[in-house]
Image (cartoon, rainbow, N blue to C red; front, side, top):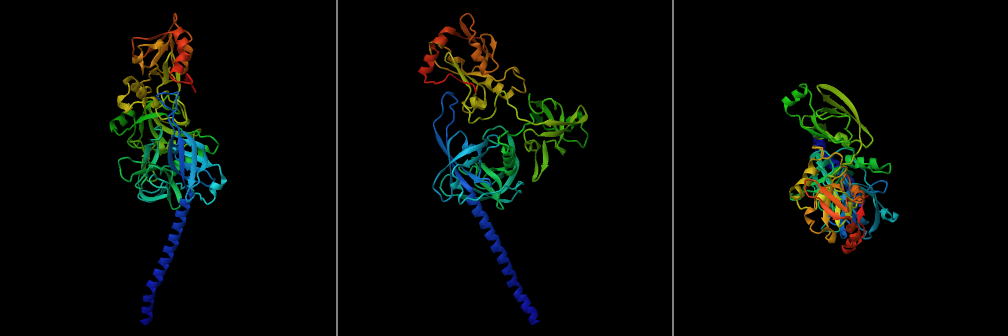
Length: 498
């Protein structure tokens, strides 16, 4: 009995000792991972300059922004595109070193809000570590740690949070595409953008934005999107993400599914429109039902099974690279059909996204400033979606679905009129969409330049959509006063057509 008692008394001591050893080892490993993540996290300072969209021949004043980034194995630094947009001068700082190091942008992907940098001075990398990426999306309710340099202090900030949601959402930097995005309650504040979000010592995402008006709700770009970006630029060029070019609708109504000839076990989505010139053009038709992508069944709400639940089937397209192809199973007129669609990017006639590192296209003639219709143009209005010119909004929103003027490569708009003797009493024509100049249809901005060379009986005649009265200029006076108008308003160049 005494011997047994000794065993009983000793067991707790042995167990406690073992737990203490395990706890100590785990703590040391955690500390090593934390130190590695800290020394791989950098602060990025960007002096940027954006174009003046209202006066397209001018640039805005310089602004300084800061963000964060993470050093990778090859010495490059991953960060957000919005941290380095429109950069004029870029520096990077590391923890416990006050010296700023000049950096250059290697690649930038605005649609996925990612950029890759390199510091020019090799001395910068002394004392830094690097991080690798996790392949999987972190589990819901799992803990992640965000590293970065948010505003409000100079030292590195480390915050923990729980993964609360995983879904497809529009990336707001460019408003061009919707990709998989992870929500966490880790605090992500201005300056955190571009910093690594870490789990078990590996990057599971890049911090991208917080939700204004909500407490402790932030978002990160998961490693799948980051790895897609890195794989894309590995050949020296950023090609972007392919787009199928399909507008689709849910098929949750059983009667409509029956009308299409879908059987009880079939699910999918309805194709409403195909964007002309897109990947799907010539392979998929309006009225088709998309049943599967790469053998993965699509739910009637457009979702598919994923690691942590259901997400939109567009993830299967986003996962492809430009130049890949995708096998899509359709139901067409009651018959099942598989098509192999080559994937690529394509341009919209009216850009419905923000553009960066690019000057606005414009042309000045007779004091009239011509520009193309785009989201950037509409953004000159406060709350443009409600207050911009109704005709411009109609063209912007419905040019594809209503097939508006399919011959136009872009829609040319009169931005403003610079008052001069040649254009008196014409101010009311601002924001008009140009139809013809001297009887020549205007399909793109360059057409205006060619058309003004052919005046009609000594006059340049400009007709506008939905306007019964044309703009009429004396062609000789427009030519004679052209240089004076540019000088009067301090304009160095009358055009930007690239």
